[in-house]
Length: 131
Image (cartoon, rainbow, N blue to C red; front, side, top):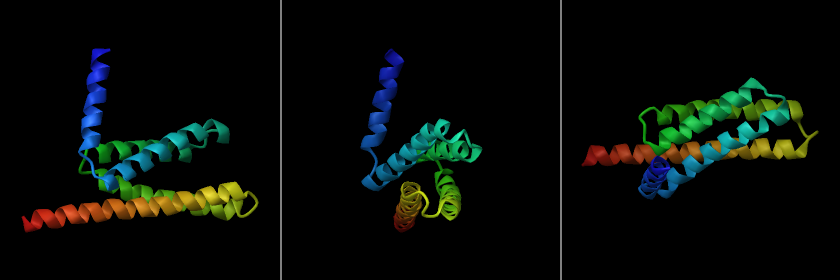
């Protein structure tokens, strides 16, 4: 039990040191990953949902721990989430409005969060070049 408490304190310390834009990206990718994992049994376990959920959770971790490969995963998720959303929209169409709206929202949020992450990275790199 003692190690769990240290881990929670470590996560809380990391979260305090993040900007709001970093926190938004971490929450988005973490929430998307968990939501996709939850939807796996409801959709007969398609492998692409499992892949997207695992990559989303790994991306949330990489952004939280500020890994150098985090932005690459953000880009990979931008491409795969966009293709997944557009593919689903094409085949579902307007026959299921809830699925169509959720796919549009998912694709839009993916693009917005990717822009937030890339702007943050560019800003940090420009500050290190000036310093």
